[in-house]
Structures are given as C-alpha cells and as structure tokens.
Amino acid sequence: MTLKDVAQASGVHPATVSRFMNARDISYVGAKTAERILKVAEELGYKRNMQAAGLRGRLSHTIGILVTSITYPVFPPLIDAIQSVAKRAGYVCYVQSLSEDPTDVTNAVDHLLAHQVDGIVLASSYDSEAALQTCAAAGVPVTLVFSHAGANHNLRVLSDDGEGSALMARHLTGLGHRRIAHVSGPAALGSSRTRQQSFMRMLDEADLPQPAEYFLGTASHTREAGREAMFRLLALAEPPTAVATASDFLALGCYDALKEAGLKCPDDVSVVGYEDIGMCDLMTPPLTTIHTSLTEIGERSAEMLLDAIAGKLPAAPVAMFHPTLMVRGSTAEPKRSRQ
Image (cartoon, rainbow, N blue to C red; front, side, top):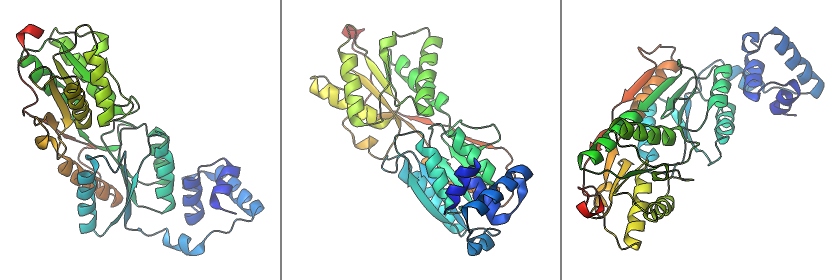
C-alpha cells in the first residue's frame, strides 16, 4: 500500500498527504482532512517510512529544474547557470524535460516533490496553474522562468517579450518593409502567444495592419515547422517581403523554404529570429535575431529560489531582463519591385 493510494482514497493530492504524514502537522491540510487521511491510512494498512519522516524536518539540499525541452538550445545555458549557482550554495539539481503535453507539468512537479526537493525552477511557459497550486500546498517555493502563470506573488524571472517584439517590428518597418508576416510557435506556450500578439500590436500602432493570413502558428518550434510556414506564406497572392519568427529554429526553417523556392534571404525576403541561440552567427546569411541573456536569467532564478528556501523575501517578486536586437545579414531593405 502506497501513499498515493491513501491520497486517492482520501481525495487529497499525494504531495499534500506526504507533507502531512511526514510532519503530522494539520496546518498543511486542516483538522477534518487530517482526520480523514489518518482514518484511510489505517483502513488501508499504510505504514509511513519513519526514516523519511525524521528527515523531512531538514532541508534535502536539492532543487528541481523543469524545462520545456532539454534538447532545445535555449535551455542548456540556462540549466548550466542554475546549476552553477546551486552548486556554490551546496545544492544538487534534479533536471527534468517536459513532454509536449502541457499536462506533464503537474506530473513532473509530483515527481520532484516525491523526491523531497527544497524548491523548483520551472522554466516553461506551458500552463502551470495546477502545478503551482500543488507546490503551494506542499510549502515548496517555485521560481518561474519565461512564464506569467500563477498569482502575482509568485517569484518569476522574465525576458520582456513585448519589448523584443517591438524591436523586431521597428527594425523591419525602419528598413521600409510594408508586407510583414509573423510565424509563431505552439499556442499552448505563453511565450508564443505573447510574441505574436505584441508583434501584431506594434504593426497596428505603426499604422501597418497586416492580413490575417500573415500570422501563422506552428505545432512546434522546429526547423520543419518553420519551413512549412514559409511555404504557406510564399503561396499567397501577395507574399510578405519580411518574416519575423518566435524562435531561431523557425527562422532556420524559413531559410530552407526560401532556398527550395529558388529565393534568397534577404534579397527576396528578410527573416528575423528570436532567442539568439549559439549557431545564429554561423547561418548563411547570419541571422538577425533578438538576444536574451540566458546565463543571467538562469543565475537570477537560482538566487531567488535559494533566498526563498532560506526564508528571505525578495525586494521584488519579478526580475525583468531586457532583450536586444542583434542585426546581422538576414535583413535588408525590400526590393522596390516587390513593394
């Protein structure tokens, strides 16, 4: 008989039951729920691990790191920065990659809580409301990275996507482009929605509203998804002369489509990426993109989490980093014949 069985029979989340059973503190659940848990545990014959219960009053000196995809180039430098700060403080990190199913966030958090982590860095813009509630009930602090989810008091480290989108739009309109498209990532990712919506808003403010077919979403931030999106744009009666994307991999896919179509970047279509992954300056042509300070973001997220674990209140619950535009060879003035 496991603790999960007790939780299911009691109608209480496993992490909450774990905290209560190990500490026997009714403040975690309330008197009535505590009574119900104990009754169910007795009926099911559940025996708690007394060694684990004895250790629960102390810190485990471990933290969890959850990222959208450990293979995506944005996350290795972020993870490395978090681990460096944690290691200096005497902490060990559990790193876990999420699946493409947004509900996997809750499962991943449950797994980390079962390993008694002292805190979690959640670096994903998937919906994480349920997971945050679980952590709050368990008394485990969380630092959110790239996410606006949860209550305003949640610790979070952000890169200003609105500002990044504004930089892209101003750059392309400043070059003289008037037909400008945007390719975004999965709608389930908050960053995808924010980047495209902010980009659309900036074009509207510049009195350059674009047709709806110029704004595409993709199922993933992959090269193939970017390629398919660019082909759809090129097939329009009036294709765009510039395409902004929500990630560098989507931009790389746009390169592929242009090459297959016998077109050149930026001669025929300018392309802008987002994130400035390590290979951007090696692309042909080098990619104009939005740079985000991943190392600084990782370090700050770890520092905020460790302070929360130690019971220190931050001066501000949100740390905002400002992106910069890296102008390279993938953007240029449009051909007059195409305007």
